[in-house]
Image (cartoon, rainbow, N blue to C red; front, side):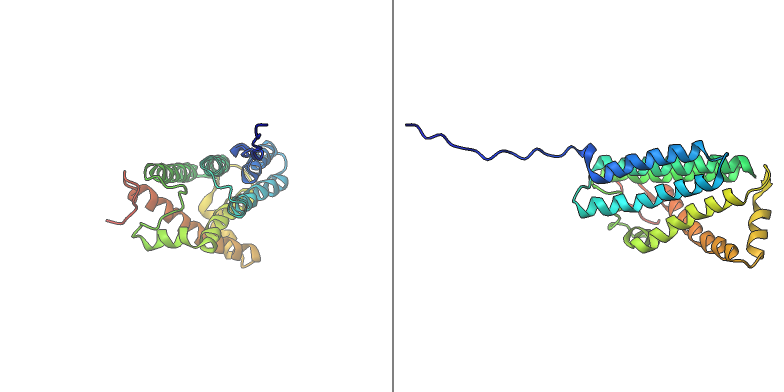
Length: 223
């Protein structure tokens, strides 16, 4: 009688689209859609939903590392969601404050810098756009190499934009006047704005570095 070899059943590989961090990414997209739908009718609900979506950005990164579910699709989904949500908020702020060109310029800088960084990452065969070990720029390496520092800058940037949206009164207010008057109040809100401004400034500096120093081969260095 011929021996029949029994083979163990193969485990089906989980589709990348069903990875836990990617599912969280889908939830972020849904939260942002609801948030921007309500942005003018209920500022507080918008701010809560927007901030929850932002917090989920950190959660999906933790899940990707925890469950070993890092993927190019997830990285792109994460970055696209971040860029679109921030871009939409900046567009809204450009309609509320003057000069609106400030926020349009920040939008272009944000999208352009991250696109260049992601593009150079793919060209060099890296799996993560945050891998900047080859960089000679100390601030760039400190930003991407220290999660706490990067987290502070990102949170500060988003919090500043949310505060500006919440404290905006009538349309076409002067951005400089609103920020200056808020800081001069000496209230907890003033401290939060000042703290956010510092992190925001560092974040914009990083964006400028990404635009000016990302070469074709993906290396980032200061000339």
